[in-house]
Image 1: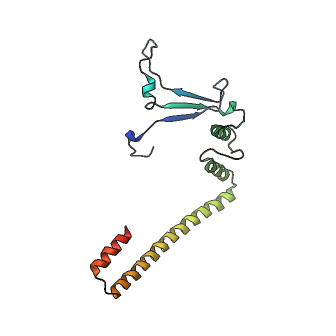
Image 2: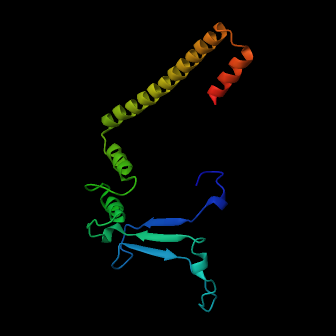
Image 3: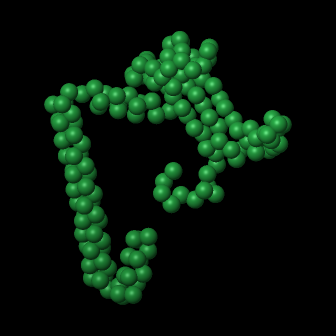
Length: 166
């Protein structure tokens, strides 16, 4: 959550815990939900009504995963297990994960070249944005000059050009 984000906008908290040791017997993923009981162990809250309020917990245990990728979740678990993406992917943002892995595997020299490329790209995009804004302003000034030359009033020019900026 970003700083200053309002809690009232939070829909649901989902906590994903990746465990790299054997914790679960058979399954590689388990879901946990909140449950409230009194001290005698009797459930005291109807969790069906509160299911959208309280957090859900997912335990993912990559070491138990059998590498048989059938679902998008399996793609993520495979990635957690091997630190790489396997084959054609369908899971959301997996391409970004693969890109991060590619960067992490770079040699020092490759990383320097990549970092320099990213810096140059950022500078170039900033320069391009400035030049574009300068061109727009230059074009705006030419239009205003043409309006004045045609005899249009300053009031009409201001009204028209103010509307264009919106």
